[in-house]
Image 1 (spheres, one colour):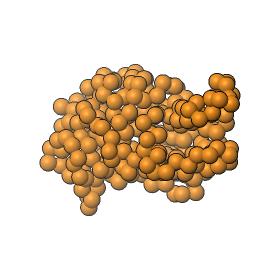
Image 2 (cartoon, one colour; image 1 turned 60 degrees about the vertical axis):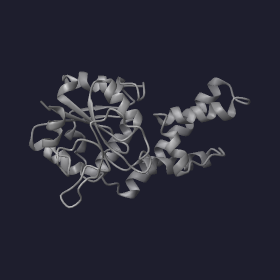
Image 3 (spheres, rainbow, N blue to C red; image 1 turned 90 degrees about the horizontal axis):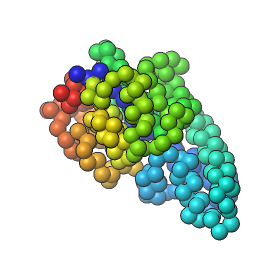
Length: 249
């Protein structure tokens, strides 16, 4: 019996990964780091979950001859803080929209008394900015549980963020389903014994989504049916509570 839907945020609720990439590049420029992440490069960077983790890894690879461990970490924190500020400014200025079918599914879930949750490797400030700009000032109230990197520091593909969400929901994994967009997110949810639906995008089209119940280009709308990339859609052409119940059964 389906009782809750747990959403990832970046790339799942909204097409934010491109905004993240631009924010990273602007921060790199301001700190005079000789990096520029193209679309193809950023696809590779997404194999590491978490912005701080990506920055630190690149600094460790390129700067170990002139910086010690503490210096690398302090620069990582400074660059990431500036990147996060730029990202949130871009969200506000850019009138960010939810991905196709997300608002429809949120509405359908609420009509059917399905609990909504978020489990993300991003920080709470980013979640708040995204939701309030996409759904309005009261958007946070739609989600009974919001688990972010402020609460769980261990990043996907660790199941820690999903395990935390399940504890907060007070539900077993078989009563929930996870919506994700990356290989690491899929692996994290599966490791928490959740079934998964994946909506891909330009940065994750080529990812390995082994184990996912359904892989789609988007959730679908009345006049824009989804395209099935893998899995059983039970002859449906959009993701709604009925389809999620079939997958969970």
